Amino acid sequence: MEELMKQYEAILKQVGIDPSNKLTNDEGKIILFNKRWILMDVEAFPEYIIKSTGAIMGERMAQEFVYWFGYSYGERVAERYINLGMPKEIVPHFVAAITTFFTGWGIPQILEMSLERGKLLVKIINDFESESALLNEAKPTNNFLRGVLAGAFAKLIDAKTHAIAEFKDGFTVISVERR
Image (tube, rainbow, N blue to C red; front, side):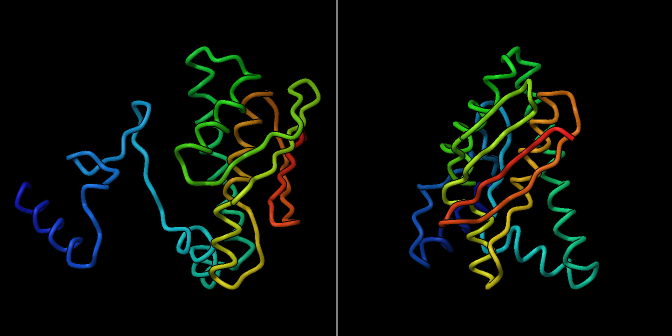
């Protein structure tokens, strides 16, 4: 394994990348908060995936798949912090902080939140999905993060939710409501 790592370091150095700036540990994993994380290229995920799978199953179906993928992930994220004993009203703010500093997904700003009324309104600054769409010459959209927010909020309010996203003034605004 050591020899393989040296080979990879040499390859990176040949193209001007300093391997000492790596994000992974010696096992090739990114570990933050005792969890394994992954990074994906914004040019490839999610817009290119939607386009390429859309050619097979239809673009709307591909967008829905990415939304429900995010929804499932959001449920698990909220569940994780609830199980750690975090108060439900704190979870969205904590996840926003984690997202801002560690995921590269953008900077979520919670504009409105009411667990009682089942309403969440979030502005995403530097949304990676909209950037991905623009890089792929598509209309700015948000399916994954919209799903993440809908799934997490559903878990917090113990109800089904519906989420819509709007891209305006260079920002993505996601509204999640109880169904």
